[in-house]
Length: 434
Image 1 (cartoon, one colour):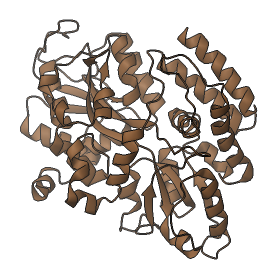
Image 2 (cartoon, one colour; image 1 turned 180 degrees about the vertical axis):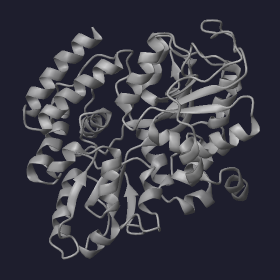
Image 3 (tube, one colour; image 1 turned 90 degrees about the horizontal axis):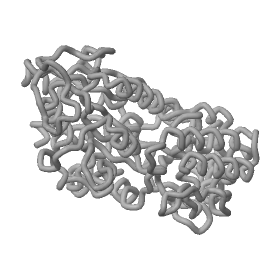
């Protein structure tokens, strides 16, 4: 199986470099889109719109597809590195009923919003390998009990930590709480090896990553953002403990001041450069940080564990990952459907793991002994995913995440106290959700 995958997906870097990154839709053999028809129609060239990271991960797969389907080639559209930007570009196109994009790569939390606005097609589960997927991945692909997307990967936040520095400080195991993490950091900083190393960072810039990190802090303190009925419930002692933990980490220097600008990639680079002891990040960082080509100073010197809890509560990750949907206005939707099934199958998801250490949505992968040996983070990822909590599920998610970012950022930058920020957020969410 391994040799087959290597032969199938060689030339990753070359494919990513030479792939056309079109900004508009390609031609079609259809006379028009099949929006609202309920039936898949037409074969021919299609576009695939995805974020920068997903474009890179799909590059060898798209290359292989195009070699086998010369009359149904896929042109990739790079929507950029920032999730908020990618979402806005997709919405701007879909609101005009444009056929510019055929297959859409969505953050797992966007499925309900896009389905509710009828921007994406309802899918027939029989056409896709849904029975092979983790339950969390299937749930993230459905809306009101109907399938609207197919998962390509499913993610939970991981705590990366420097094994060499903890060992030098006499710390035998990674922290399980924020309090332990702070103590361990002080021990490391007291060593010669730990001089100049910052303690912890996550994604704290004012974008979707901040929503994720805020939600994880609240959930890890026993709080929620929306209750089980979908009503805002964030102005609580538990949420206050979670947000205060983040704010105090900035105030104390546990989180460096420049972390206020960090997103996934900038944080990854800081960790790879040996500047961080602990880093909250997704699985894709594992392969890059462990590269032996000189690009990482921490290769072989780190491991991963679950996110730290707050107080007596266990650490809880926000659910991440991506799903594939078909635009309601797509041309050549039969081709689009086949391409979605191709990217969602077990072989393609395994390739994503082997090439880029991206956590797959296929359940069996996590129990494969050969893969677990090569990617030791898999058992941790599986454990994290079993307890991961989705960000607030709502057809108004765009407004909700903007409100969270506004108030969380105000708190960690000192413009508001945590209590003031949560009170304002509660009011904002009540207005949004009605």
